[in-house]
Image (cartoon, rainbow, N blue to C red):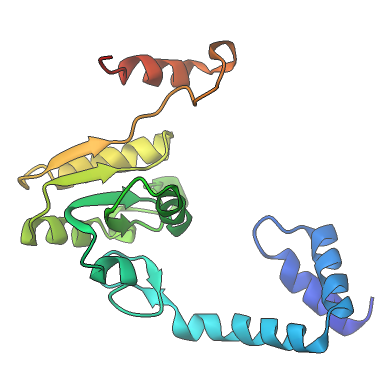
Length: 196
């Protein structure tokens, strides 16, 4: 491979979920595409670091601060959904089932990986809850050791605030088979059961 092809392949292979073969296919696709597309893609990649920043209120990634979700008057300001990552926020937004505000942690508590409470902006969440008319905080972190530890930390941090703290349910997915569910999933499904 020539220098330019190898350089681009190496850079693309550093992206999450992109291995060497996929990077090579992407480079070949770009070489077969119109030059204008490649230039447009390069300009968009170059500009993203300059125009996107975390929202000062919720930590969502945005081009305007505060973000469009925080400034939308149609959103329910009394409910905040806490998510670990921006893709988690996008998934909830795409579902259309939640119309409140968000708080993005940009990670989960993982001391062995150097991620502590200060890295998750939980104090910013506490300030939002204490200073506003928030009645419920929904913790929507994944059901893992890190997700549960983060949920517990949030609950402890907000314990002195006059706010209801809830956790998203987890368990057997719709259409799932009980025989294939792991022990933890079955435990959560039975523990989080609700009246019919």
